[in-house]
Each structure stands twice: as C-alpha cells, then as structure tokens.
Figure 1 (tube, helix red, strand yellow):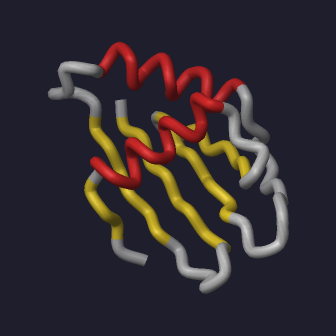
Figure 2 (cartoon, one colour):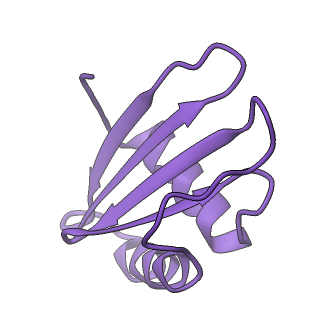
Figure 3 (cartoon, one colour):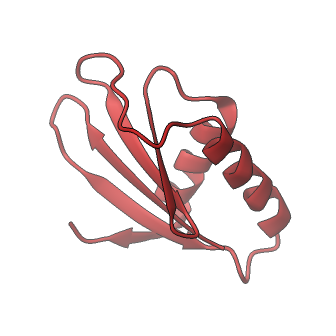
Length: 92
C-alpha cells in the first residue's frame, strides 16, 4: 500500500509532503488499519479548520481525502505523523 500525506497551511503557509510504502514494513497490518480508518473519517472535498491551522490531503492507493486541524481523528493524526516522519519526503 502506498500512502501519501501533504500538509499545508500553518503560520508560514509551507507545504510538506511524504510517501510511505508499506510493503516491507513489519507493522503493515497496523498501518493499513490506520489508513482505512483515516480515509473513512475524512472528506473527499477540501475542508477548512482554524486560521493558521494545517490542512492535510491523505492519498491511499490513489484515493485522496482531506482533513484539517483541530478536527483530525486519532487515526488520521497517527497516520499523518507516521507518514510525515518516516516516509520519503516529496519535493514540491
């Protein structure tokens, strides 16, 4: 499974994106469950949170959904953190 996360907004307005491929991961079943929950609890349309908050686009196997701070679910928050910290950083 390929999971991409793009984070934009915040005070500086900078965009950060990363991709995680779960094929070789020992925790792949856990990450797949997080991804399913994160996608199920998100909108296909761009959503807006608080001013200067982050907006996220989460793409799982070609399906993109959107969410924003402070309304992330626990699974979205954990998945976003995992992908942005352990995934391969993508160029803008």
